[in-house]
Length: 90
Ligand code: SF4
Ligand code: SF4
Image (cartoon, rainbow, N blue to C red; front, side, top):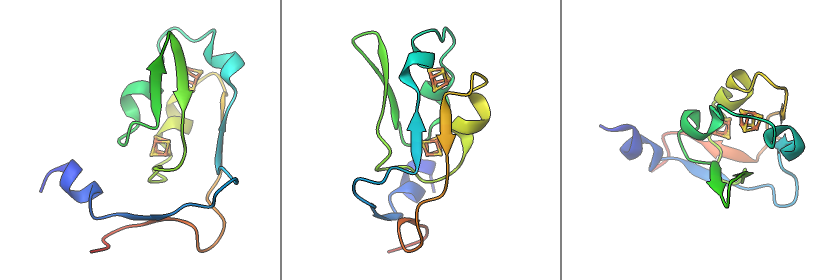
């Protein structure tokens, strides 16, 4: 089973308006290597009009972006209880 197939078996309960990850885009503006763009398995990070954008709703809580961002732009936490991703659903 491919990674994408496995990811399709996840389910999300989004805690609307309460992002569990926050990104300081002023730091991103100075970032040259942008590893978050390739490490996130669900493409929460994208580059649009020469800027790195972030959307947290599909996050599978792997923590990779926090590890690879050496500049401290990522403030990462788990979602509140009952929210977030459910693995192996369906
Ligand atoms: S690695 Fe960190 S600083 Fe660089 S673009 Fe990604 S989140 Fe921003
Ligand atoms: S924690 Fe993982 S899935 Fe969530 S935004 Fe970071 S890299 Fe992507």
